[in-house]
Image (cartoon, rainbow, N blue to C red; front, side, top):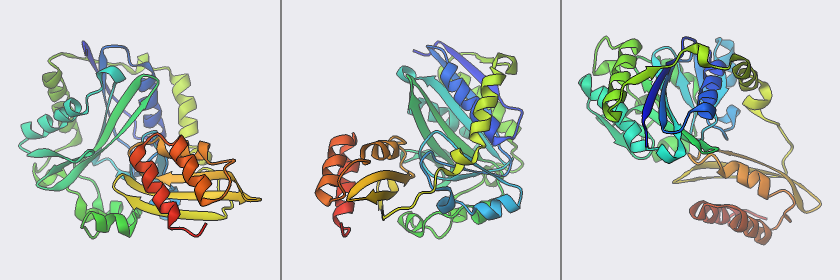
Length: 328
């Protein structure tokens, strides 16, 4: 049961630092406590834990224009951050994790500003059917976080130029472009600033949880540890991963997300697997990457391995059907 609520507001716009702080707060949040972390990144594309950077983002253009590519711990798809966007993260022990309650903070803050926000599906918040907040989730070591974007006055022209989602994904949502799917909250509250939204979120946080929020000081952070996480977050290995020669590749789109499966095969056996996915469940890709090496490269063996090792029943059956459609 939540007995203490705390807030932390980042004063930096460096995505690698802000994501490092987020991980540190996750690892150190105390029992019966919920932290609301508010932060902003400058000109950044943030991809999901298991996504292919080259496929989701026009990386060369982003770099040429002084932007940043970042990878987060949670699953899900790519998002664009600039200083017209405000990010929020709720960090709690898993026993107290309550997405509905956490999202009610966002909706309450918006409604107090006269914006009729509603939850749509599992991970979006919309106003009149247009998305202004995408959310993702992560759990590890008995602690969890739920984070998302709030589009206040984002440069949607840049968003459309940097992000390159698959045509199939856009068609599945019945829209023509990234920009046509989203809306800035300034359209509903002219002149709204990120600072005003921060204060409204803190007030809503206190109202929903019925507690007074304790502001956290930067002095409480282990800056040495955070600096180490920041270096990892900005490393090419973390951002892009290894590029390997693959003998087999297949991809599919399912209700739970897109997936690209690549296998390095030698002497009829899988030597290495690389999996890219925007599935909200970030564990799907690492489960497959650990399970498939050593498996004989045959349809029966691959399907048997997936059915034995993958913990999500619906996903493993979809993958088995995808493989059955290939020439293996």
